[in-house]
Image (tube, rainbow, N blue to C red; front, top):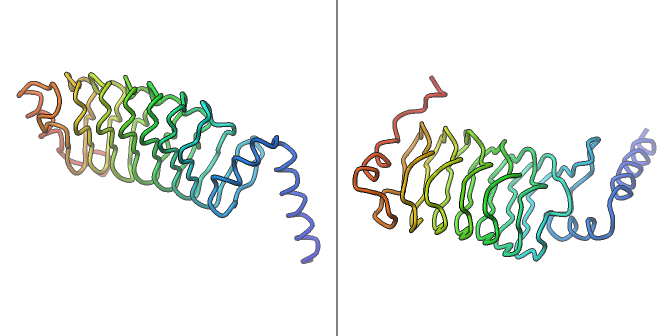
Length: 211
């Protein structure tokens, strides 16, 4: 029985590799922690742990991720133009911090178990594409200097909503309807009016979805 199982698993691994080109395999072996990954029936890549794509120089992710049973971090990828290829589901935190060529969040993960972080994306003009709900933790888009409003932001955030030091933020249009913990953004380091700063500081009402 053990030999049959081993052979079956070996065939599965070989089949996963056979669907990918060398660039894709090299990418996965470099950025998937512990190299614990496999191809699923939909042609996506599932992982058993974290994915840490740091300082990647490509403009696009070369594979489509499925389920990441850990955190997914594509950080400081200065040339990355799109989040297409991001996992469908992330058990931990999703982060694209410091991806300075992104102009929106289209293609990002919508099913996030913990936090969603897109801070320091200095070309980000819109939060379009962000998940509608962040149940597991915080949503953070601080220091995104190209944001002028919050269109596309999640409607519900279980933890905190942070838009600190977005220096050109001039409107709270699109701000979350419900935030579970607190809002950070009415800090004077943006172009919001005094009235809008006050609104930002009282959005933190209650967890509607827990009632």
